[in-house]
Image (cartoon, rainbow, N blue to C red; front, side, top):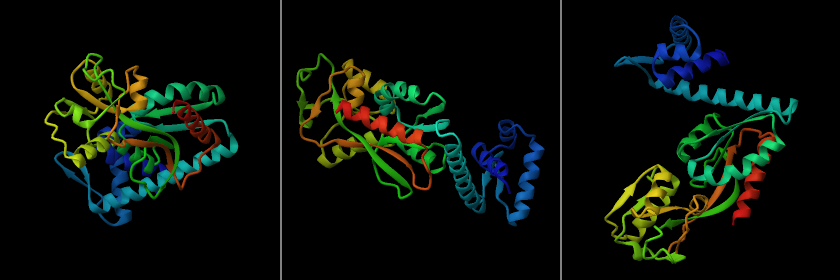
Length: 293
């Protein structure tokens, strides 16, 4: 077993098709078939099984996959640390950040960061906070920036700023001139929120359930741009973060009877060593977040 073969294994499990895996790995299908046969002989049990023309993992295969990902994550961290020792200002930094956060933070941070570290290959990966957590665990990204939720034992967290949920109202809405409103003032409105799979969606949906408000018209969507534009154009009231609302150029309206404050954090694996250029990114994120408060 070597690192390249572990990459073979993970890729096969991702695409569930030998032909497609071979194409993406730039090897032949017979090469992968022989690899699987040899690997299963080594471990003494079946790791894969064919189901409806796709390759599925057996229980042993799932356990093997878990350890393969851990080994690849360790290799990634080793490469990162060696690179940090040899060339402190040269490397790759992969950052996971949800769209609702990237639009307000990255346009401020990236121009400054690029001037300081022009040789760093900065890669921005989007997705939901749950997706980003998974990528961080697997070593596919080095750093995550998002709203703090349940703390993961394997991560370190640094607070980079604060945010809070508020509402977007159409400029023609009767309450549009208000800087703050109460929930009962919008009970008859169409409520636009993100799905529970997002942390913003979790926060507002938990609030509505706790208060037992009889909202009858609720529209869920994962596209925050659509949600914001719909509210601004008069199709309901949207619950979104203050930073995002102001970044869109819309008026922010506070909820006066609900504490919807949130901590924005940078997360990274405890088992990894962040290079100086990653630590500097966190510093800049803190600096620009504090300027906005």
